[in-house]
Image (cartoon, rainbow, N blue to C red):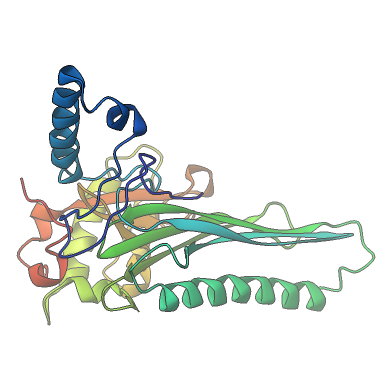
Length: 280
């Protein structure tokens, strides 16, 4: 789960994003700097690295070239008939010029609230001394990361008796610069009918999936805020998550619909979203 800085022993300091002020070149190049061939290699390496540093970052599982990294923290507890295993992200303190306090506090309090709610339900359920084994197992993925935004997807399951566990899905998008959580309406122009846009696009996409049911889709993708509360950014578009049962039967799991930025560009707040969107 940890998201580390590039492993080339590089120190990055911000004087405007994309400008790199200090480079620590590997010892292999420094030792041979007087050699003509190695001098040329040094120059080529420096130029190539500078070009790569300005290129589009990778968004695979939270790996990042940005000057901070995210580390997993865990709440883990086990009793005779319950298991608690909840992971949550934290910006590593002391490793970044970015303000991490609000993000770290929010995610820690959120994880603690999940555990607290589970324990309260466990106590109410009168499970003590029975054979039934309750559990809450939740982890996270970094879905998008930049100097401006972090998008987190939580997933897992909570078992409180019955035929099977209840699937758990949630998303958090955090504005690093403003130190605030991002709400869906923040992405759009004031008074924009964004729910209608998202609903129309999602319904059209969902109807193309095998196994979906029109009744599920009509209610689960209707233009209401509750239907579109789980989202994250991607390079291709705004990703909407529909948990099991919302737009399809349980066995189909969580369904994702990527709404093209081109489709919603007329209603997006481009000043707010400018660092994310790349129109084609």
